[in-house]
Image (cartoon, rainbow, N blue to C red; front, top):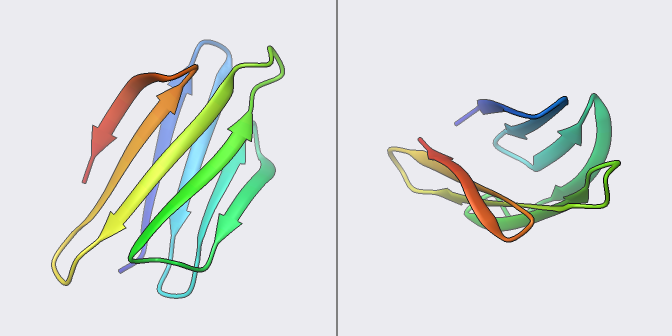
Length: 79
């Protein structure tokens, strides 16, 4: 299942793209991380401010969920 999430965090745009073969993270249109584990994968990145970004993506047969953390704090969780 292909799915894309876009999150605004201050001046930053964090985008997570999930496809059948991989899941990728982009921060401000720059590639940050990729995983080939599309059932359950973690993506890591860093903002220009130094804050750490973590996206946790979980797939089932009927849905895909993404939880986004910035600086250790949950920013968003969506299907």
